[in-house]
Length: 412
Ligand code: PMP
Image 1 (cartoon, rainbow, N blue to C red):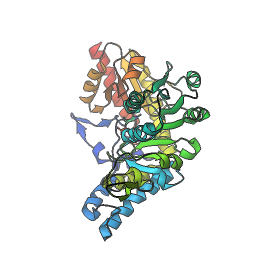
Image 2: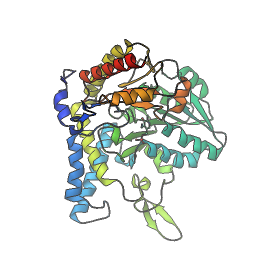
Image 3: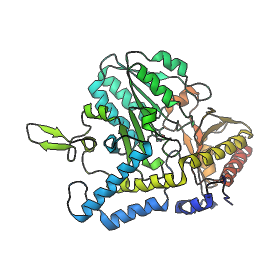
Image 4: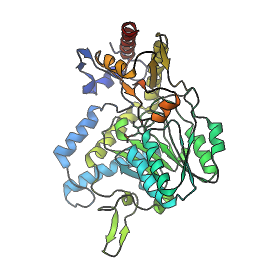
């Protein structure tokens, strides 16, 4: 069972680093295909959390005692690793947040509040997660600005021709995902950023589904903001980053007020701290940020291109096998995809499919995947989504397909 799929990675050995995978669910070996929601954590990440709390838990930046210095160093080491991971030009451009949701809300609440005026336009796409829709809607409501949407083509790719017509000198922000969580579509973000810049808009990239799968070079992309969640990159929940170009971060007002983000406080006036601390009010999520570093090391050690190749192989295999099943319709057939396979089966509700697969130990996600407008576009309530990570195998895909085959025979 579980033989390595691609030459370079030894999947068996990788799986040993993920104890959670080694269990039975409903009497069957667990097949975890809900990686786009959150992926599992290797021992190095789990141990980093235990080591932090058992060895050097202390509040950071302010303390001069040994534990505080050790914790501060570990926290700031992660910032250095993230800087290298995304090729930011300075660690001042890496701000720790809870995840992509908070990163986008930060941009909307600071850059947006400061620079968006009535009549300005913000462009998102029809592929966006609610966290890249709602903060912009809230901003538009507050500022009497206008939200525009890049349409989605039948195969799940964005209609770039329409996008090029949508942009104008009124466009101030363009915010799209690097890859879609519902369909897997990899968006041509470099081109989208260029178009945004051609009219003087800033470009925000939601990298939630890219972090563990796609090369990210913020300087080469030339994006203005880039958002990541650690928990979708083999790291802990509750930690993530907002990358922002220094010159933009400098001119943005702070996000929250409190400790850490200040230089000096009097009752008359407060001066704000330097970057990145200006945006990091209060005690941060120290343990999870420290452990995030180990997740980055895990990805770097395997090599993102090897991870992507393995997942791509699984995606191709799963797509081919699932397509042969009766009454299955794939939703999202873009040319370039991350390892996300969304589908529906005529006559069976996605929720029922999810429950029946769970009874066989197979964990998939069902529903709208926080992309209700996208589901509406396809005229469906939701899909069944299997999403792959580096530890998944062909045998696991076979279990999914066998399960679906049984469901179809039983239900239809
Ligand atoms: N954008 C996309 C494309 C996502 O997949 C997700 C998580 N499902 C988010 C944003 C939100 O990320 P988080 O919940 O980690 O803030």
